[in-house]
Length: 107
Image (cartoon, rainbow, N blue to C red):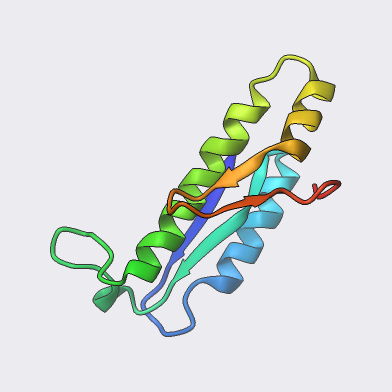
């Protein structure tokens, strides 16, 4: 499982880099999760301890980690058919009390 987070000094963030990294991950047969986070203006985005200053940024970063953990847990199933069944029927929990169902058939 691979979760992508790009950090850049400019306002545009690392969107283009993340796109290339997603392609590279797929070429290496990695499971690149759909969620990703691009952090722009990195010099001002984090406090002196390295924590995100914005709750929105913190949630985006955590969301990537939660999705990696979620897919890794599902992927450990020995039977791939069971994995797909669990994946399509599982609810995503982003840790903030909100749950959304994975869209059936999404891969």
